[in-house]
Every structure is written in structure tokens, then in C-alpha cells.
Picture (cartoon, rainbow, N blue to C red):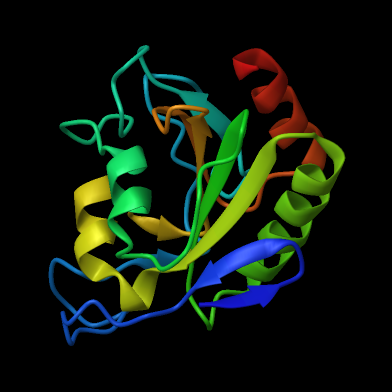
Length: 170
């Protein structure tokens, strides 16, 4: 785990041995379509932020992921939930929009007290990618203080979109 900007960057192998982009269940698209979930409209690549039903966890992707447990397990190293919210970014090394997303989320986490930004290398955590229903990078999960996923965005969101989504959940 390394620090880049204001984010906690998680890059550790989970033993899967696959890499992003290989054919199969573990492949993750880079810079793909915006997935807003819950029937909300979102333009392809817009970074539109969607919302699921309260308590639904991964939007449109099966059972809820227990993010508080994932963070507490140590599987991602020494990462912690933010006091008020956590922005979890799934990225890959070759993803251009991921870099812009990192900058935006670092800025927002610096502006809003109690908000943490954690970046997870999707290539190194394929089991978590599958469990969380991540289909493209960058994907940002908006977690509340207890680690429950409230919103998610695929594509590179703008700062105003992230601030608006955070304001709705805080």
C-alpha cells in the first residue's frame, strides 16, 4: 500500500493470478460506460453518479458487500472508513480516466471534513472486483460512515457531481 496524493492506494496481490483485461470472469473494462444503476439515466462515459435502493449494497449487482468488514479484515492493508463518508475508487494502472478521477476525489476528500478516499488496484484484487460487481474502471463507490454503499459512479466524475452526491448522503 502506498500513498499518492491524498488517497490511500492499495496495490497488493490477492492470490488470484489473473490480470485485468484477460478474457474471463475477472476482466474489467477501462474507461467504459457510466453505470448509474437503479434505472437512473446516465450518458456513456459521463461519470454520472447513480443511487441504489437504500441498503441495497452493490447497485444492481446482487448482495451487499460488507465494506466495514473488508476494511477491518486487513485484506486491503491499513485502510479505514472516513468519519462521515468514504470514496472507494477501483482503478487500473493503464486507465487514463482513473488518474483524473484520483485528482478529483483527492480534492473532494481534502475539502469535505470526515471524507476519506481509498483507491484499490482492480488488477490486484480481482476477487473483490467480482464480489463488488465492478465492471469498468474507474468506478467510485460512495460509502456512508458505517461502510454501507449508498451510491456508485463509473467513468470519470466531475468534482461538482461528487460534491452533490456527498451532500445528498451526509
